[in-house]
Image: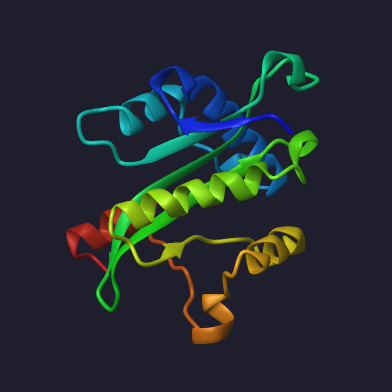
Amino acid sequence: MDFTIRAATLEDCKDISRMILELAEHEKVSDQIKITQRDLEQDGFSKNPFFHGIIAEVPEHLKSRDGHTKVGYSLYFYTYSSWKGRAVYMEDLYVMPEFRGKGIGKALMAKVSQLGLAAGCNQLNFTVLNWNKSSLDFYRKQGCWDVTSELGYHCMRCEGDALEHLAQGDL
């Protein structure tokens, strides 16, 4: 299939926002989406961006049934491991359902890996839902391994009122 992978631009935020919602619907968590297109524009394309993004795009003659040429994306950012040093975290990897199985997801993941290696990173980290067998199988085929099952780590989160209380020392 003919497609290109390129850096996301400010003008892509509308499509990224659309695909974030599609991803959330697929993961059965669309009620969790709180960010807007404007948040993406500010957080990804300001002087000190919180994330970076790449887009998978097909030519006009291959556009989706709904008329989209931007058919996949990945958001990523750089982190640091106190054990291993520089790392890249892939927040999202998404390809519209009608374009899956055509190498687009693998190309997006490869590009994030290339960008991480170019920045001196030695690992790529991300999460995947435990029920998403097709994604788990895909990632394992790429040479990835399950940190939770192998090392026992769990991904933890503190947000909302709990975060406010924690910051105030109330807990």
